[in-house]
Image (cartoon, rainbow, N blue to C red; front, side, top):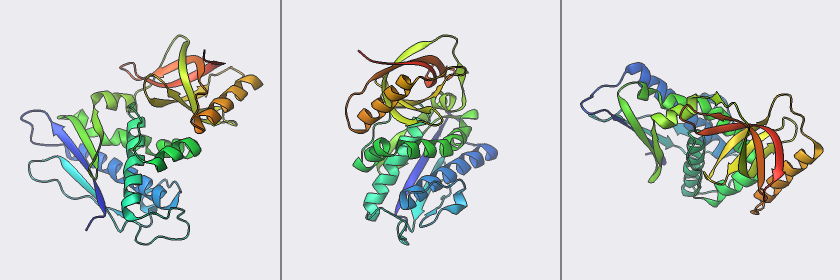
Length: 274
């Protein structure tokens, strides 16, 4: 019996009753790999790169029901063989809620959707360990593109559910966001908070006030951050982590999807908002 399951329900165009085998196999690979990586992180606090490295649970896939493009991915043996490296004293139910909410955050972030979370644990993770959330997103980025592959065929959109929670709807706009990057020609201003920042690589993520989501940012080429720029970015991150405003305006060249949705900013200047 599954401890919990994820459902991926694909909706084809009217009158279509088939799905290309290759498209389905690519989507299933993305589903299995992404769920394995997030499940392993919830259980062990470590990010794996290969699905077979998952320990402490199994991700299965049930065959689609007749007349349906719904793939059900049960998670079994969840937390049943916990080891000392799991710093989570959680019940199966609590761990399941954590897994669903973290998966929701990552899938929606990687498709440009709002990042509202439900559990305190994921909110704390996002504020206190933003670098780990970023690394998880990097690990899942190609899998999210793979899950959209059936949209190259007769599928119009698909829904993802984790247990009883609706993770979201995904369509050609989210597919475009996940796979397309177009660099802008002009500098633009963006207001929000630094949600993560690596002082060595000078990249991170920026919370957009208007969109309720984060986008990545990097130092633009040939730009040298001053000590004041670094201090402002670190200050905003500290304020964000402690639930305070700490708002900045970052000026830079945007990277957008084909439909114009912001994905990243190549920063040239930083200043306080207001």
